[in-house]
Length: 261
Image (tube, rainbow, N blue to C red; front, side):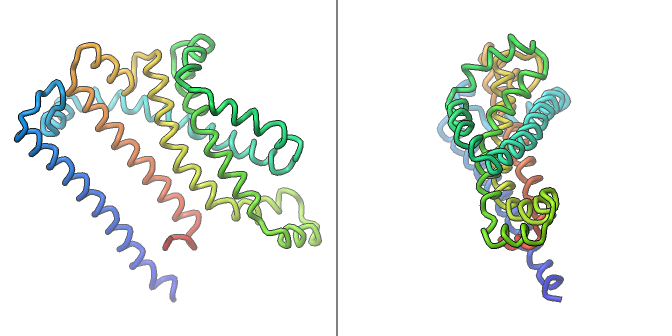
């Protein structure tokens, strides 16, 4: 009964958070609009939101096509980072030798600026979606590894000892003990990784692409079309909010006991 009675309150709280977020975005755009008109800013420097939104409405199908391409490469890189990051985290938790020798290498690779290696992916994989997916994966996977390792190691020692006494298989122990314990940390890492994957996809499109929002920004930069640059940025911001909101929904569905957190 208590769980059922808490559901309306939780829905009300989530609805209030969404409403407050929408109000803050609208307020920021209105402030931008008013300040731009009062200060008479040059459109090439900072276009008004109304002008940017009008351009989006006029060519919405064109922006949608590029946004879907960026969304595809982002999600592919993100999914690969989750699968690969969890697999590497399992190896690090299960093998001290791998953790001792593998973790410094992972940290070193993460320290290399991804913009510097992006041209290499284009050389190796061509100019299709593959290099964008690879860059998105490379940027996002470190966040998954760090949080997955933290979560997998958060299982108390007495619980691990109990699993050995009950002689459960490795898979049973992982699915029933380690994975539930690691889920909060893993989802936190996924929230960070989804934004990083979007950044990686855009970086890949900056380097070499004929499609995607990164291509839109680069081509508009060449013609000093600031309105189109901001329009692409608006779509990117909407994509980021959508993907983050999707992960929040997944978190609530997979961990209902944390819905009030």
